[in-house]
Amino acid sequence: MLDELDYLLITALQHAPRADWRRIGAALDVDATTAARRWARLTESGLAWLGCHPNPALIGELIVAFIEVDCVPGKLHHVSEQLLDDAPLFNIEHTTGARDLMLTGVFRSQAQLARYVGFRLGGLDGIGATRTQLATALHTEGSRWRLDRLAEERRGILRADRDRLPEGSVLGQSDLDLILLLSEDCRQSVARLAERSGLSPTTVRRRLDRLDAARAISYRCEAARSVSGWPVSATLWGVAPAAETARITAQLSGMRETRLCATLSGPHNLMVTVWLRSLGDVQSFEAALAQRFPELAIADRAMTLWVLKHAGEVLDPEGRHLRRVPFTGMWDDQEAGTAERELLNRIRTSAPAPAPPA
Image (tube, rainbow, N blue to C red; front, side, top):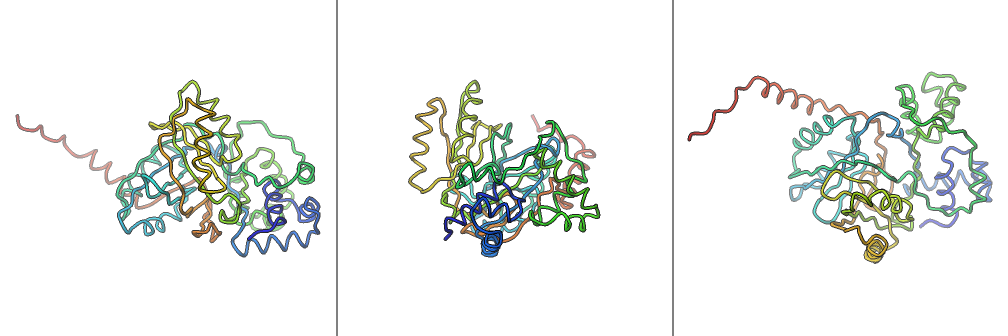
C-alpha cells in the first residue's frame, strides 16, 4: 500500500517530472534525499513509474485507432503476448463484454492501419475477428490526469515559467531521437543525454527547453491501479446528436473520472474511459451521465480486467510495472509488408473472374 507521502510524491512528479529532488522535496516538506529514496522504492516495486513519449499531435498527420479483437478460445494470452512489443500499440486491455481485447494504436496513415489490421492481426494465430474504429478527435487523454493531492501553493513551487511556442510545430527526426533516449529514463541528467546523443550539454538543454515549451513531450507519472485509489476502469460507448457532441465532449473531458474522451467514426460516435473508486460507482456514474446529458444514449460498456500495456508500459494483472516498449510513431513489419506486396502482385496480374453461368 502507498502512504500519503507516496501519493504526494507521485502528484508532484505528474506536475514536474524532471524537477530536481530539492525542488520536489521543498514542495512536499521533506528533504531531497527522502524524496529520491521514496521514488526509488516505488519504482523498484513497480508500484509507480515515470514515462514519456513524443506528443502525437506534433509528429505529423497521425491516426488513432481503437481495434476490438475476438480471440479463439484458449488463445487470449498467446495473442496478447505476441502483440506486446508492437510499437504502434499504445494500450492493450483485456476487457469484459463483446470483445476480448481492446487495442489503442497510433498509425501514420490509413494504409498503414489497413496493413496492420489486415496482415499483422489477420495473420496471427488465435485471432478470430477484429473491428476497427477511428478517432475523429481526441478530446482528452491520460497524460493530463492527476491524482491532485497537492495544494495549489505547493504546485506553484514546482511550476516552471516557460513561454509557449507557437502552435503548429512539427517534430523533426533529431527531436524524436532525443525524446526516444529520454523515454528510457525521464529523469536522466542533461549530461547523460548529451553523452548518449553525441550532442553538447548546452544543445541538449536548449532543445529540451524548446520541446517542453512546445508541449512536444507527453510525460506520464502513474501508480499501479490497484493502489492508486482508482482501481476500476470502465469504457462507455455512446451516441450523441452531432450538434451536441462538442458541448458534451468538452464537459466530459473536464470530469474528474475521465481518462480518455474521443469521438469516433463508427455507429457509436463517442467513447469515454473513466477511472472509478469501486465497481458500485459504475452504475452511479452512468446514471449521473444520463441526468447531465439526457440526449446522450449509452450503447455499450466494458470493464477492464487487465491492462497488459498502458501508454507503452507493460503491466502485470495488479497494474504493477514490468518493462517499457518505446513508442516511436513508426511501424514496419517485414512479414506484413511482404504479404501486402504479394497480394498487390496477384491483384495486378490476375484476369477478371469469369461471369457465373446464366
